[in-house]
Amino acid sequence: MQTDIDPRNLIGRKAFDRNGTKIGTIDEVYLDDATGVPEWAAIRTGLFSRDAFVPLEPSELVEGALQVPFDRSLIKDAPDFGVGRHLSPEQELQLYHHYGLDVTPPRAFPDHDFGKLAGTEET
Image (cartoon, rainbow, N blue to C red; front, side):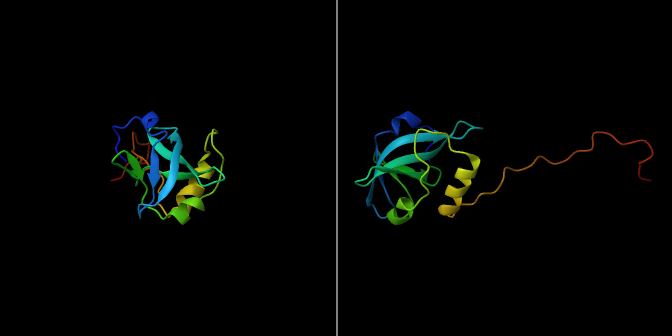
């Protein structure tokens, strides 16, 4: 996703699936707790006004609309967590799995030996 876009400017924009079929309108944008980067969009879909969460990372803004690289049917079948509440890490994991996205944990910092214990020097 383009990182120079203000997430507040996404709200109200139309969203389309990979085939150009309209999904709905962006209702809310969810930021990553640790980085503050926009991570998910809640898109109001269909007659029953259900919100479906879509990942923003593989999506892109095309001519003022959000182009989501998934089929409409997959998006409509996404887990429904309701909007206006915080997404828990478990809920995010469910969404990543639903979309078949890689969920690699953050890279761990390498362990460093900052000192040796007495008597453990190698010879």
